[in-house]
Image (cartoon, rainbow over all chains, first blue to last red; front, side):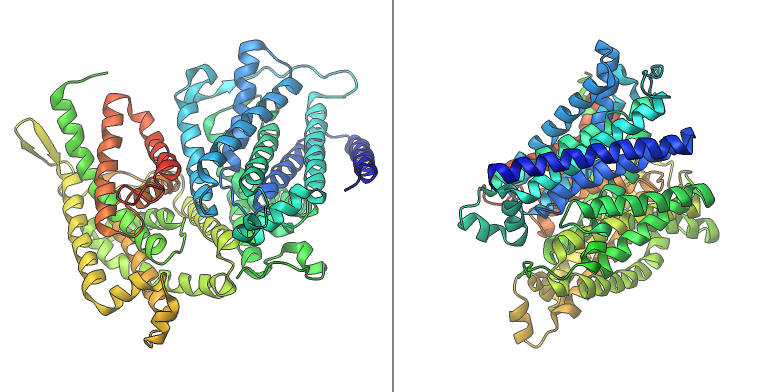
Length: 322
Length: 293
């Protein structure tokens, strides 16, 4: 990619993200109801998680079952920093990114040398361990949880919920920009080569280990960022709610339903599954909505292996697996 | 820290009893993950589902839970056979096991958990067998029957499994199928049929383990989560599909976990599974007895 194309990509991407932000803010204001911001926050949060999961899961083909753990790590970073230094939320979001990145790097360097299955299994038990640590850490409230005082509204925003909702939108937009940039760069092509045939990629000189670690780190950082505002959103955080399996399921289901080859897939998936869930919670029950998500997820995995995007796009030259 | 020797001996004994149960629970996974190369992360969830069914059956008929799980097990094995056919049809046949196959079993695990929650609610399920509160004491060392009886049954089941895998033709074919499908086909055996039998066996074992589990401790719908780390750690420590290796790893694991609970505190024992799992993956990915890489 040339420098000029690079510049044009970032300029157009940022302009698009900003336009979307303003449009979203205006649309949600027009609804004139805090509930719109509450729902918007959740959908954007899932969008950010899904895009982040897809960077490692979709582009490189390494399944991370610990999205919930990375997410909760970001949330608890906020609780700890808010209590220790009374840091404002944007600083906590950055801290959440650092914690998530470190977690991704450590997990990755220990297990990504092996087959992808082992990374998947160790991330699966990551959330059990982090939850054990948090339950035993009385500073952040232990098993009974921690309360946070929600700040008053910050001037340009009508309410603190509105601020949180737009902050989460900004996080999701950042995630989409990063994902789109990766797709267009040599990193993305390297990851795709790893997904199709790692041995062949390594033989052709693709720095496979370095790329996998980079993807795990970036993906973890975004998940940590997405978790950081949660304690302020709920004004209360306990281990059970932070480590709920629903986050992990959604982070995986959304890209797999939408399509894993491009950042647009997780966004489509988040909009679709996110709104189905909100409707099911509102009209049926929250446990029924979980069953529904599980069924949709398994149905897509079995019957539409390339997701929604795959239904509309012609089949790209893709590795045949073996 | 409390270094009272009686306490430590007692912790080791109860760790060995718990470890026998872990060995049986992991043996089913060693068959699917170790021998058949099917990464069934829903195995612990199926075990917990069987524990729920056993507790319902015991509640309805007053059978002994360890007898009840013998009745439940064939149904789970049948379900396992069907499940493998589905998995084969949608994923294995297309060479698509890695991401989507994993996602399939993850979805299954999630569905089982949510369905148990819907059907039975969030309450813990437990059973009381005749021997639930009994204790056999040798000197100052206690053998609670609630642990001892399942441990003995576990060893019985493991012995039968070992004999089946070593002595029968089908058993040896199960051990061979993941290594060389073509060789099996040349001998006139259908690899898919062998894998179906192997996977059914693995899920049947999960149901037996569920019966033992509910005697040992009460379960709730999310109890399977912690067993994912435990069982995979044991199978990897044991060196993938080696039954004696899995048994030794299971016993060792039980002892380490109980010592942690006694010396540091019970709330820390879940971290043991993960620590061992990560440690083995990073430094000895071929298990306790495998060659170091």
